[in-house]
Length: 136
Image 1 (cartoon, one colour):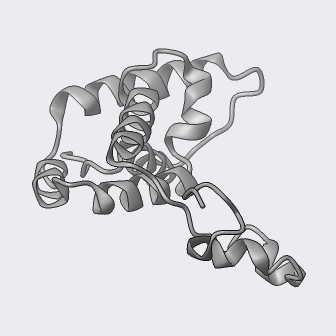
Image 2 (cartoon, helix red, strand yellow):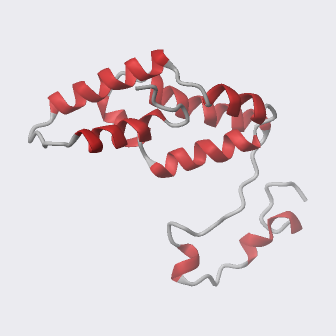
């Protein structure tokens, strides 16, 4: 049997299809098996979306708590997890300048501009900047 065969013993979770609504909702935990190459690709795609994609619509995903959680999990599963955690524990001035500018463009593009407190803007920036801490 192959690793991708749902009937294989490695994928016992696929056999339990009689899950309740609580078990199949947004917070249900499902096993996922990724190769190191897939982990690298997923991590790079999320980091691109956050820190290289110029489109302000990408902010919907860049600050997503769910994508930040995925990023944390793939980082922890990475072969170089300790190095990556250390690297991401330091502020990234370039990424922060990029994110601040993208957020400002987004606020300016709103059809119905919303007033945001400094605290709300700081929280949005912090979510979008994950996994980097905000310097200022």
